[in-house]
Image (tube, rainbow, N blue to C red):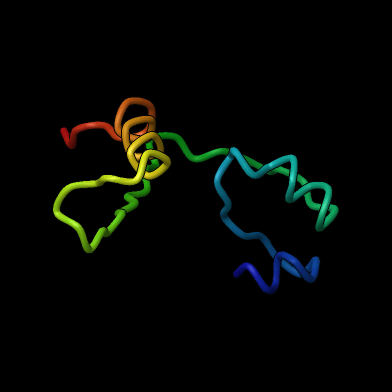
Length: 71
């Protein structure tokens, strides 16, 4: 779907947060929005405890602002 959409021959789904970038890069238009669609992201670490300050900061920010408990 994405290849056809990029070629101007169809539509493709994309996260709303990327709408401005997609418009600029592919001269595409938003034709609608899907409500209540969620994506799950996983971060895998070889360490049981995060120790690098930057990794800890990213992990805590993501946990606070992005992650929500499943209903």
